[in-house]
Image (cartoon, one colour):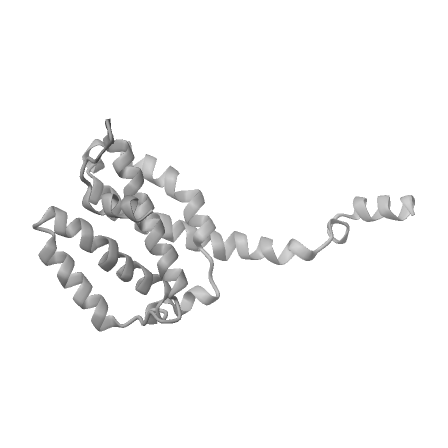
Length: 177
């Protein structure tokens, strides 16, 4: 496991006896490296402290190492993982207090693809950054509207019996009893 971890970090073709490891296996070992690091993080989760200062140091180190591919490859596994985990597990951001009463995730799932396809229909908007700048706000807006005008009301009806809304259903229930 340690050999796979190191091989994935360094992204170097490795000979094992007479076998040459191909590039797709290198990608797989790279993923093993992230998985192994995730296991280690879970194992020592009570000892890992998240701090914005350390995130800034990790980010600065990644910027410096970006000019040196092997160094960046090794450093990104640790520093990049720390940054992502800090963002995901750290204290909530101040601007996200509205997410406690709003869940737009399903709306984003539903509307992202159609919006992206509609934007891609216009030839001038096919560049990734421009497409992203248009698709994300439109998708989030549609998801927000969908949550407030549709999904939230439908979720409240989850515990309601159909017979309470449909007179024909209540009549059928009374007859069948």
